[in-house]
Length: 385
Image (spheres, rainbow, N blue to C red):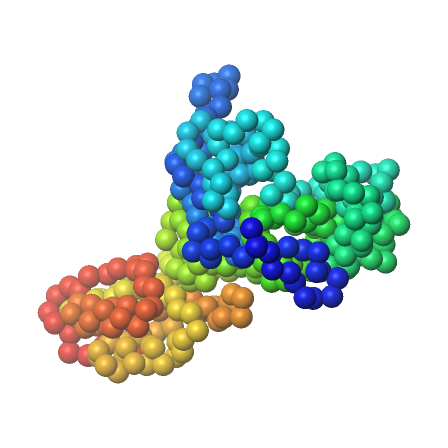
């Protein structure tokens, strides 16, 4: 295998294999995993199919009990699936003997939620441990550890013990240790869930920086949608052992399709209408229908990325002769791109509303109907402002 070498200061020891960019780094094919419990068989993974590209930051998210922990154990070969294949870097890992599994496991660096540092070893000693276990010559270990500590910003703490450093610093040690054997994949299992929000942001920024400098594929297992929003290129949503939605982070945030995804996105963005607002809208729609027979009313949820929402609403109103009233709006920053979520009350004839819907979707706006009130009585001659 031909290797390229990074030119950045103090990272030249990190090897970047020049591989075929078309082939994914991780392929999970029809994974099934079932456990026996006192209450019967429990299916933890149900037909997981997933591809993670080389060099990307990929998020796997889901509520408690979704199967995330089992999936982590399968990816790093601590558990063998009952059915299906795990392929990393073109190498099928399922079915290998134990010695081969141990060798392949070195291709995966693991960052843990609770750090798992050895209290009797210094920062330097903790990072050196996997190199010692791998049998790296002693004269090579010291320089490599120093470069890793420089990469994570801890050179000045090399002789401290875990009890003498903060939680965020402990996680930096964990990241450096995970990189010690030049892995192809850095697997982060809830690595920020024990940290405060500010420390979480700095750790995520560090992971992104390492990803860009080294090209290592980063897989984040998390229940925190905020983590996904900040760092992940793509995301898969896990629920009850199955992937219910996946795609670009931007698309998933802008237009979540599955109810589990919508609930998780809403918890971060507070983008849903409250029951009180929905009740008020129903009353308003009923009053408008009574006053103007023939007028239909809808409440739409519009999601658009990087567009001009004001121009969109104006264009729809002018071009199709409908009344559009803004009910609620929120703009989120998703990795530097503005993603808008708008709730609008639309009034018009069924034909003009349908034409406006088609026009909005033609502009790549995701549209979801939240409330629907059909037209009644004679055709309308004018619309409420």
